[in-house]
Image (cartoon, rainbow over the protein chains, first blue to last red):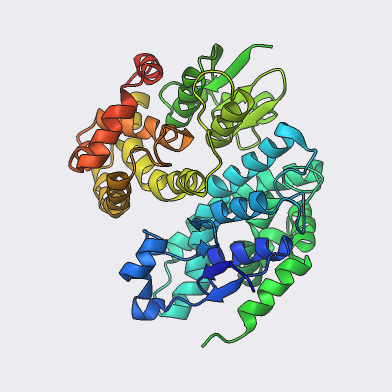
Length: 220
Length: 210
């Protein structure tokens, strides 16, 4: 019996980000579908949960939260004792360890996410939903992402994971877009030695494998 | 070691860090980074921020890059000094901190970069970007307007980091022809008038070239 509900479908990168975090933390949840084709995400009831009309939304007995990265932080802060205890800098990591996680979370949000999301849309969702692909957008965003991954490659040559020696939220947030991009343009990640090493490790985590399994189950 | 902030006062991200330091009443040295000569791509600077971007914050304990990681670090590290910008770790506070970064900032930055920053650094404004992004941000601002109709500040009753993180971009917008985006929405307008009247913000604004 769980009080946790996640609204949205696992194929959505932002939803899958939250699911990965819930699995890492061993927190039970139920998934409530949102029928976007029927405009459910714009209904007054849903807008009360998420005023931007987007997925995911998250609800438990204490709060309603939206923005996948805020939801992940909320889960980590609410359940410090459960599952992986190192996701936001470790119990005894101190402020600098937590700041390092924050720093690389921001880098993901500001530098990795925009070009990778644009590419994910062009390479995976445009064909899925019948939109025309834009070759110029693909080229531009690939070039931007390549620059970001060059920075990551240097960082991951000095550090096992982005924020330090442990797998943290700063790595986890990359899994959804990374997964799609590696399936469509694997060279971006795998031709960079340290990024490739990092990607193999983080995508092999049991928590992420469970999310991928959910994505592969046909959703009605 | 005293606090050092590497950046430029015409950069909204640097201003975000300046704003938090002033709100906390902390002294700091602004170390200008000469972007025109490529100082930000040189090894000494890349050692501070591997992305080669400003701002970078340093104190005796460490180095932090990404303006929002800096503001969060300063608010936490110096919690007892000046205004407490993270009074309670509520879900609402976490949410609206994130909303600023993912919903508000991308279109808003593109508008103020074109209208406010490019003229200062000798580049010319692209008005079609301004119009496009103004359309996009209107839907986002409508959500803010509804939220601020029920809440005095973004996280509830008190001014927090969630409000502060918005201030550089809105300030730059206030000097442009697109300030109507805020002023046409009564609750957004009232919220901006309140937060920009804070003495610490006035101190920050007085040191900017806009």
